[in-house]
Length: 402
Image (cartoon, rainbow, N blue to C red):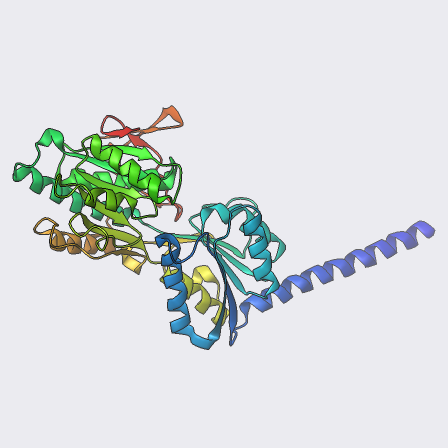
């Protein structure tokens, strides 16, 4: 009889706990599904407005404030390191009652996802990561990134047109058609970017080759400038970059008038510091995602149902077709004739779904596993399954890594 009473008691307690759990789940769900008059929005930045990468997120933040006004309260954590700083900053924003927290550097991904698991009442939106759809999957953890290979490719075409002009004018021979790339790290995001750029160059000058040098830093002016100078010494006549300062642009500008070396930037226009060298830049426009997320929360809607883009589970990306990628000012004083018209043509093609950038008579080799190769004659669709780039192969014989 005592055993039966114990069993009965356990059953009752278990049932009550289950009711509480489901009630809590329904409560959290109701919080997320109700429209709101105002939300608190947190941003975690690895730098501040002085660096172009963070400055682009701050542009989105300010656009959010302009569009939604007093419907949003903004809280910002600047210059946050990846380890302890990241954890402390996210904890601070949680404590301030943020409804959504945007973590803007890939180095925050692991910590941000852990916090999402601990705080299901808060939406966490992580830029440039690919872990939203990996176990454990949380409904309140999301990843996002613009399909920047599109802008890189167009930048490469502009560079190729200039390279072709230099050949036609007798400034260089086809054998001297060499471009250089200041690359931060050997990772998929960087490799995908410089490959798209190079394939754009080769669309115009099939004989072109490219030398890549890694800096092992995202943002170091002196290192990036020196790396560009080394590429120039190696015979590169156009320099591009996936790094965060104007160092490479200045290195090209300082060659003038002794030598003409042209430049293609990233994240910001660099024409102001290199008016006779820098031709164009591209950038990710984060505003469509940031504003879309906040409008979704204000309306009580799911983020992936409201934000316009290519949805992969809890991950969203987009290119020119949704305004996520932008080409910045073209330096018409030095760009080859017809560059502006070509840019417009390519943007229209991307908006219509053109996605065969990674295609041609090339073999890509995994830098970490030479036995792993990719035959581009069949084509490779970048961002097919995630907003973060996945093309991590170095093109054999035509891209030189130093």
